[in-house]
Length: 337
Image 1: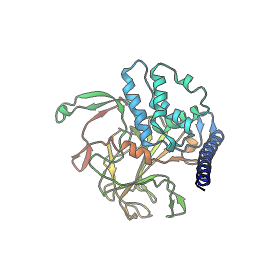
Image 2: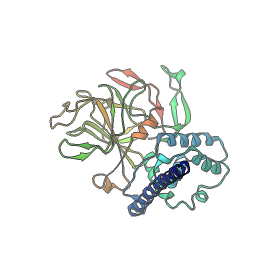
Image 3: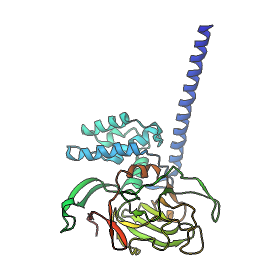
Image 4: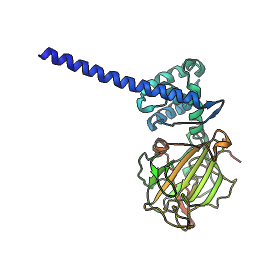
C-alpha cells in the first residue's frame, strides 16, 4: 500500500511539472508568433513590456560598473538578452542568467556573437530601447556645496530619469493597467494611477519637448511630453484644480529631467473645465511608444508602467519652494539646447 501511494504521488508530481512546463512553452511560443506578425522593418506595432524592476536594477548596475572597465556593457542589451530567453515574460527572471551574459561581455565577447542564435533579440532590443532609451547616460548635476551661490556642476554617469513623484512625497499604487473605465464610453485604462495628496509636486521623468498641455474632459488638466528621440510620449493627467502647472508650458519648449511640471489633483471626467470629477487625488501616468508618426493617434502602443514606476521610485528629485511653486533643488544640465 505504501509503495502504491508513493508511486501515485510521484506520478501526480510529474504530471503537474509537465503541465507547468507546457504552459510556459505555450506562452513563449504564442509570444514569438505574435512578434513575427507585428514586426515590419524597424517599425513595431506591438510591445508588451513586462521587464521587472529587479531586472532593470541589475542591468543598470552592470552598465554603471562597466564604465571604468575595458569593455562597457549596455543595460538594454542585457535586458534584451533576457527578453529573448524568456519570450518577454520576466516572471522567469533569474539574476544568474543575466550574470552569465554579463560575464561574457566583460570578457570581451561581442553582443553580436552572444546573440547570434537568439532569434528575437533584435525585436526586444528595439522594443526596450524605445521604452528605456533616454533613462541612462551622462549628465551634470549641481553640487551640494554650491547651493545658494554660483552653481558648480559634477559630471555623472548613470540613471538620469526620475520618479514622477518628487522626493519626500509618498504615493500608493497597484498594477492597474488594462482595467476597465466607463466614463464617456467603455475603454481600457492605458496608464498607471499613483494615489497621493492634492498638491504633490509632479516631476518630469526625462528631458522632453512639450507636445500638449491644457484641459481634456477625460484627463482634466494634463501634460503631454515627447522624448528627444521621439519614441516616448509621456502623459500626466488629473492635475490640480486652479493651479495645475508649475511652469508656463509652451508647445515646443524643452523641459528637463527632474523639473517640476505640475501638481497632483483630481480634475477630469467632466466637460466643465477646471472641475474635480475624480473621487480620489492621483496622478495618471502613461507612456505611449511611437515608432512611426501614424501611431500617435491611431494604432496606439501604450505600455504598462508599473515596474518602471517601481524602478524609478529610488530616484526621486528633491524640490524646494520657489515663490508660488516648487522647483528642483539641484540644477541639472544634460547638454541639450
